[in-house]
Length: 119
Image (tube, rainbow, N blue to C red):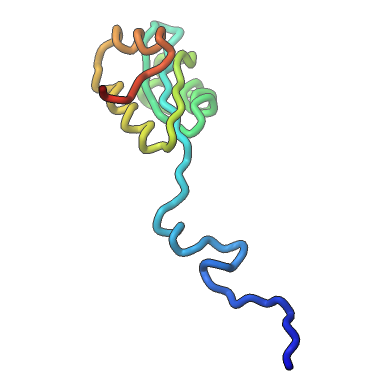
């Protein structure tokens, strides 16, 4: 009679330290943020999305690494809203950019939240 030493045959579903095969097809979702920054130079707004808007502002926008914002440094973060994943945040970012209206962006900023649900 063989002694059981507790070894388990390696397979994608039971091998520790490895990613199972189903997660290779659908990567884990990263939370996303939509943010609005305002130029302290002339008051213009910029809308973006990121996994970390504070880091994005400090490491990219205020250091001149973004072509669209480098000429209006310094920038200040005036609005953020969290979403379940980055793809949803990018959809909302695109919707904000389609507004093309400073008045609508200022209403979103003053309200402090953007309702994405359609009634």
